[in-house]
Length: 186
Image 1 (cartoon, rainbow, N blue to C red):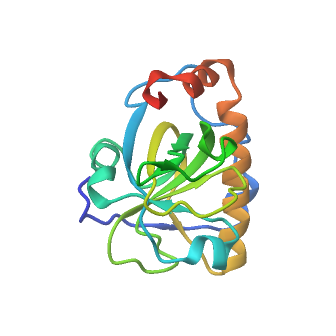
Image 2: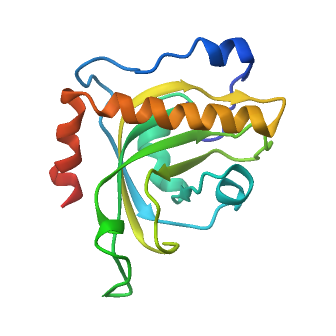
């Protein structure tokens, strides 16, 4: 699917949410995963942290091509690392620069009626400061669910919280933990 193609989107419903699994994906990684993305963190729409309580990092459009060319829109899990350095000096703390679990939305964000596809990455860590302009590496390890539309912001937030729990449980498996120390993050 190309960056300009939209697909039909299902509505996130209570019955859909109640039937979601706690863990997704096979026990061992299978193609097309892992998928690698990287780029400088850009300012997005500012909705993740303010509107949804889930701050996200956005990568440049060209950074998402390796992902969007082999997958479908939806929510994914894996690991991410934000470079501690910006403009040649260490700005972020050591903890902020670790390889950390992430959940990512790839798509059009139908609830917000976006005009272009984006990859919004939520690194599951409480950062001390923002990291706009810092390089970020992302390793996508699996698919959680399709992109959905929502009747309310509260329903979207509920699914985001479930996505985070599913991501953490899915990468906690032995076949996935090894990727946290992958040479990609060196």
